[in-house]
Length: 233
Image (tube, rainbow, N blue to C red; front, side, top):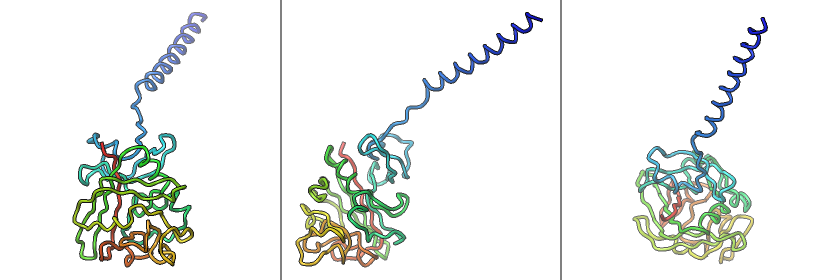
């Protein structure tokens, strides 16, 4: 009877040891979860498809962002998108600072994240535009920097290429304005009428207007817009 009890105890101890060993092995050889700073770092991963991912701009806290992995080699982090007017872009300074919307649909990523990313590494900006006849054009800027909040998220952009026209040259060096913070050079607050943007004298482009009559670029109104940034590797 005693030997039977000892055998049962040994078996129980063996099972516990096996369980602990398997847990240790699983922890040791578990797949590494990479904390991508933005979508640029996914370009070399052929398994990554366009979609929503968690990125870590400050390498600590994660936010949801849409990664475009198909346009021009992929690796683009979408910072703005307008597709169906389901999300209001008539927002205040704090909203544009922190970001808003649905990364799967319409969104603004957040000025503070744009500053964190572009202040440490070299980035490019791509703007994709679609008009009411579904004609698509784009603008590419090889430098894209958004200053910190003390600079009012001042915009710096570089050399242009594409077929949409270089209308953001008028926004270069401008502070960001919202309906509750007016930093443009005009007598009225351009952001109240045309939406939050890097306005000068109400600019020659603005893509955050209240409706599709105010997605404006190079003399044309657009009903779909997408702005994306990518680290220059």
